[in-house]
Length: 220
Ligand code: TIU
Image (cartoon, rainbow, N blue to C red; front, top):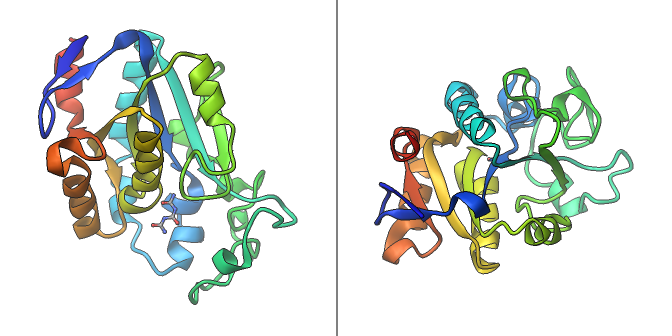
C-alpha cells in the first residue's frame, strides 16, 4: 500500500488493484455546439481541466495501470434514452437532434467522441453508458471484478452529475474511490466544491479527494 495524502485522511493506494476512470471527457460536454452548451452552460471550467486529466492519464500509462474512459451516449434509434431524459428542460438541441458535431450524444457521432487531447490508447477500456452512472446498464462491474480491481481513481466531467453518480455507484459496490480534485470540473464551480465536500464528509462516506500533485508526490 502507498499512502496518498488526501482528505479526510490518507488514501491507501493498492498498486496491483487500482484503475483510473475518466468520466465523459467528450466533445459534446467540452466543445461549442455540444450537449453541454445546448443546456445553456459556460464551457470555460470544463475545458480548463484537460491538461491535468492528460497528466493523470500519463501517470497511469507510465505505471501500466488500467484506464477506463467513459462516454455518455445513446443508440442512434434512441432505444436506450428514456423520453424523460430526452424531453427534460428546454435545451436548444435535444439528445438525437442534428448539431454542428453530428447528432447530440449519439454513439459514433463526432460530438460523442472523447476530445482529441485525451484520446484512449490500445489496451484501455472505452465504456459507452446511457446513464449518468458508469455501472447503470453496462458490464463494467463484471469486467473490473475479473481484472481484480478494488480501487477507482476518478477524473472527468461533470463533478456533481456523472462523476458523483459513478462514484456513489462504485462506493455501494465496495470500491474505494479517490477523486482527483483538479482533474474534475463542473459548469458550476460552486457545485464542484460542494460535491467534493459531500464526497469526503463523514469520514469519506463516498470516498477520498486529493489534488493531482499529492498523487504524483506519493508515487514519485
Ligand atoms: N457527463 C455528465 O456529467 N453529463 C451531464 O449531463 N452533465 C451535466 O452537468 N449536464
